[in-house]
Image 1 (cartoon, one colour):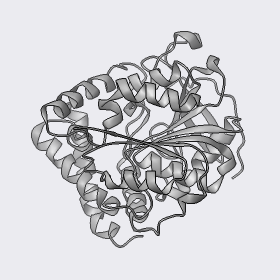
Image 2 (cartoon, rainbow, N blue to C red):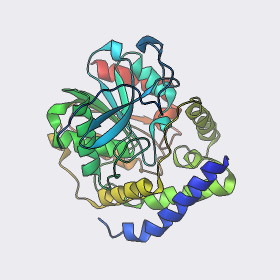
Image 3 (cartoon, rainbow, N blue to C red):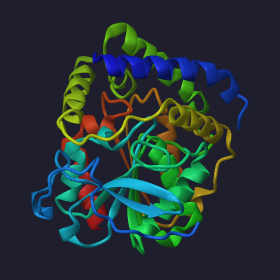
Length: 327
């Protein structure tokens, strides 16, 4: 494992353990600016049809006093944009290139760093509600009247808040590896994450190998392939998440896990709900609950798969997502 990654993980583990006890008891108008690539994070300029997740430029848009970093693919496809909402401790480079490129082959796709995450400015939010407010600010700053949402893990919780806050803004939603407010095991994600951060340090492996994938031969192989894909982008990579942002996100997850469940029966939009059958980070029963409580949902559960089931089974997930979005 690289030295800087080891140092980051050690900091994260130290900070995470320091706040775990506290977590158990802790429950703007958009003003668009030019979206030209920033000099610090831009990849080599290419036409939209030539771009892929490995090379696409990072751009910025300013709204609500925040400079949001984002990457955009498939704009030439037109239609309703698909906004990707990322997981705990993640930045732009944590999206699986095959999933992003696969969706962008048919759709206009945007992934962004929320406030205080990666290359975006500002102080990180410590609640799903505030993360959703910031995401809405970003979406409106981009000039979108309506979007589709693809929320993975914590991003799926943010997506639920967005659709409850501003239902007219969302056409369809994909929720992967996530759960409802008050869901089983969500308030203890900090303990699971920090335990696997420590395991990663002790074994010299990326903790996502433990957090996202099963310990079966299939899961271990899928994890190694996924991590290799995450490293395909060699130039103009995003800034790593800070310890302060990681702690804020743990606070948000703890509060979400202790929150009273929302009335999801009011969500009338089509929702695709996806997970592996053995998610130890956001336990799989939460996925069944979402599918049961959302009145217009479709459920996919992948076998011998964990939290990162959509990455392990990307060859099925991408066509399934495209079919769902095209309906």
